[in-house]
Image 1 (cartoon, rainbow, N blue to C red):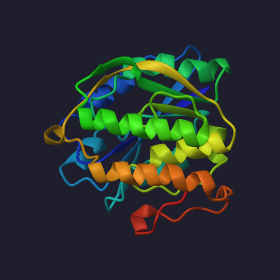
Image 2: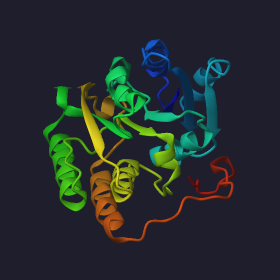
Image 3: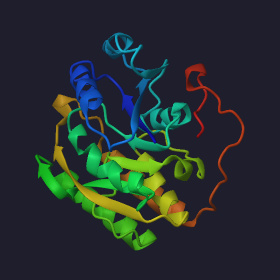
Length: 248
């Protein structure tokens, strides 16, 4: 079984080498192979040059513009060839040593979707405003979709590839999490949670999500509860590098 680890990055020149070192060394379930797909979302700080050092080890896509995390993940899904997809942020908030517990339920065949829950694990440094936003989004998810989860906005999400291929994603920025959660539940999949470690960072350390993104996430949860589910795109998607909105 091949595990595709998708890493969307934007201006992470200072921490990216450490992240990639940890990702490459991280253990995954026995019998699996690892594929790393990095999508550089229009970085301007030297991240692109750093990534070029790894071009013989990983799959790299460079976008000429900054479209957003959601767009980068969609490109990564399109380029991934694995049986399972795991999302990894391009910073040090999440610990790749948690890959084993996130991936094992899918490899064992006991789950099709697994979320790593920060609230079931070791949560460090999260500001109250972020804690409250996470709790509100999770509560809305459970009310709207009967998801019964504790952490909707966690970055550590793993999916069987066929689950992702069965939906059409529209996200551009941080609304990837609520959109994919909504569509996973609309398709009837149970979200399995496992505890993970988390070490929050602030804006001065490079954190990019803002309070406005919380409102967008809430609207995304509400919207996808009621709009008809789109069929996945069959045609070849236009390239973000050519200035078109990505499709997945």
